[in-house]
Each structure stands twice: as C-alpha cells, then as structure tokens.
Length: 365
Image (tube, rainbow, N blue to C red; front, side, top):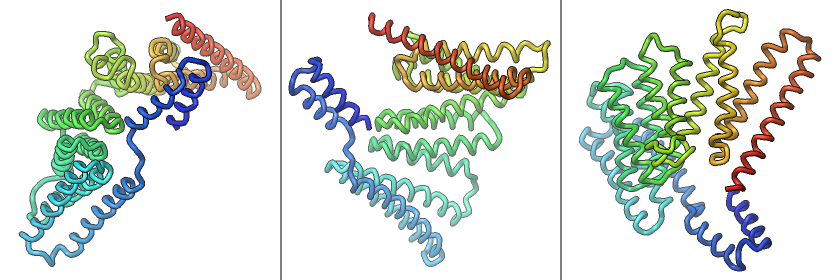
C-alpha cells in the first residue's frame, strides 16, 4: 500500500519538475533495497515453525512415558540447539525469514521444555515463574540474533509475565523483575529494529506503570490513568525530554500518552452523574477532553497522523456524549437529532479551520 502511494507521488513529482528524470527510479530502488522483501518461502517457514513447535509439544507430551528422563532432557536440548545452529547458518547466508522460523521454533521448544521438565521433576513454581524463564530465553535469543519475529514473541511473553505478576501478590522484587524484563524487551526491539515489538513494549511499560499505581488503595483508576497519560504526553512532546531524543518529537510516547489521558478522563466522566449540580467534575471533564483533543491536534497533528486521528475520535466521541446526555434529556427525538447534527457540523467546521491553519503555518515555514 505504501509502495503504491510512494510510486504515484514520485511520478507526480517527476511530472511537475520537482524530480529530475531518472531520480524517481533511483529513489524507488533505494526504498525497495531498504524494505524487507516479501518471501513466500519465509512465510511458509514461519507457519511451519509454529506447526512443528506445536507438534513437538503434543508428540512429547503424548509419548512422554516412553522416554527415560535423561533422554527427555537430551531430546529437548537437541531440538533447541539444532534450531539455533540452523538459524545461525541461514542468517549468515542471508535467508532472514527462514532464520526467523528456526528461531521461533527454538523458543517454542524452550517453552515446551520448561513445562515438561517442571512436570517431570515436580519442580515448584507457577505460571509467573515459567513465563519469566520463557521470556528471558526468548529475549536472549532475540538480542543475540537481532531477530524481529523472535523479539515480537519475546515481548508477548514479557506481557504474559506481567499479567501473571499482576494477578498475584505484589512485592518489590516481583515489580522490579517485571520492570527489568520490560527494559530488556525494549533493548531487544531496538536491536532487532522491529516496529511491532516496540509497540508491544510500549503497552508493556504502560501496563507496568498502571500496575504500580493500582496498588495504592486511595488512588482512583481514572485519575491514575489520566495522570500517567499526561506525563507520557508531556515527556513525548517537550523538546528537552529524553523520550524525544529517543523516539523523536510527538512520536509513540505522545500517542500512547494521549490515548491514556483520554481514556482516564472518560473513566472519570462516567464515574459521575450530570444530575449532581454541586459537583463541578461532570462540567469540567468534558471541557478538558475537548481542550486536550484540540491541543493535541494543534501541537502534534502535523507531525503524527495517528495522534491527529485519535484526537478527532476523542473530540467526536465527547461531542456525541454531550449531545446524548444533555440535549437528549431536554428535547424530543427530532429536536435531539437536529441539534446534534448542528453541533457535529460546527465541530467539523472548527476542525477544518484548524487543519487549514496548520497547513498554512507549515507552508510558511
């Protein structure tokens, strides 16, 4: 999709004289050289790795009693070692997709080995300990081989460990371990240059922060989520912030910060009733939501399309909510529809004026 759009833009720029003849072909060739090539063999290899990994687990589990204990351990270790050596050879020869498939198979075998060896030797532990060990193995594999697919699987395993840790008893050691796992997952995502695993790591980090705030009994979830979101949005937008130097201004940190801030304000808003006249919160929160949406569009709408569309969604949802709650109680169905349409039309006009102003300010620069 992006390649097709880029080709049309290059052709347009060539026709209008922005690019000299031949430059478009060189730019497209450079883009294709930098982009990961699609390979049917690689895709089939990944699917085969998933099926083989599941097959190994089922085969060993079904015939576990036929193998001596030492043979069981050697079998699992042999499968893992063979998959890692195969991945190293394939990676050296340039078959990255097939190498990813071999690494994926090794990580799946490692997880099966954890479960089966623990069952065989009756080792004490729970899902949290097993997920931690499995995630550590996956992260080490992803870091050593700089494998994107493996980094995604390892990040998901780290999320599973955070879920099991959140479901159990809290302690400083457990919380620190989960945070360290998230940091290692971030390192693995950057080393593998995997956009998907980096997004998962952002969710993992945010989940860890919310988990820490949730242990405070007096803290309200809506206020906690909004506070975390406001902090991320500020750190992701401030010029001197370390997050800006790491991921760029108005990048992923700003997007997730805005999402959390709007979500937290929505939780606060639904916790209160508009019937309570003495409480100013139901009146202040809608104004904050609209102000945050307009502010996010003005601040980062030009730099990040995802932030712009998220702000549009928040603005439209809040406008519709206000129309439903306030106007719907005062007017009939037809009056509600008419006034609601007028409000949405005025909102669309305001957003259009704001977009034109952003576009004119960008062109003046």
